[in-house]
Length: 444
Image (cartoon, rainbow, N blue to C red):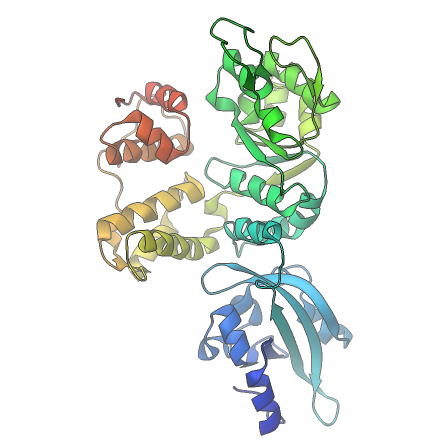
């Protein structure tokens, strides 16, 4: 360990044997020492860490906003037992408690600072917190915009307030919603999702509120609605911007009064569920066009979290790509999958209209085609029949990515729409509508 020159052999031996990670930095924030526990907890080799800025190695939650080492260096005061997390070499978020101290020479001159950190993964104690960290880990990011989101998540998760998550398709809105639920006091209760775009008006009310036996033709038994299934947990309303004006009135009552009427009952029931909603649409713009109720928007928009598209946080592409490659590589029986440097350059050059979902899809495809432990550039080519084409009615890059994903899913299932819908994570009826919109085909 490259400890400061004043460190004696006994101190060095102690630092190498303790279970807490310890590292030191100089006045330029470059790492000057890195003990064995720090290597084990971070997954970063000492030789790789030495000489690099600590924020590059640890990628901690506090690096962007309230760096403990910076505070210690500027104020000359130690910090004790600060909760935080950092991203390890595998892209996983590691919860830690850290402390800092300033380093001075015999004459009192500041040489740098030291930080110790304790890995809390084994002592976190409850499945709720572990699940929350895993969910947050799916959104691992180096982007300052995403770091701001991560910093507010614990407070958002602990509250009862309604949250509106905005962002393009594929940015991870449902992943974020599940993370908020998992980290909050309702984690032991159900998380129930409803994709509002998947149902016409005639069905969405039944899906959300449920019905009694005999409520309508074909209702031969009682059906529990999603809101009842959620109980005291969380109800996630995805694609909220796609609901009709008529159904917006019913949603407004649900959010405002927290009451609803199951079809065919004539009785009013109450709910204690927390509401999270998401949309890829610009709701204020829809309000101006008269297509979305302003009073409903205010009920939804208590806390707004906007997930930036992947093209605005390209610094995350390498970590995400490696994470996906390892995941799909393990499923394919490969011990470790590498991404060729030229292939990585292509990933960084792409605009990713389908965002993280498109990247995940592309990496999965590349792992399958590679059949080995390295993804080469040729495995990242466009899906045959898609590159250079523009299906009729295609109006945006988001739609182009959707067409690619639909065609890929249909190709993998020999055109079976039911199986393809499962791969895409949507209802079969939704896939059929999208096929009709884009002029695609399928069977089953």
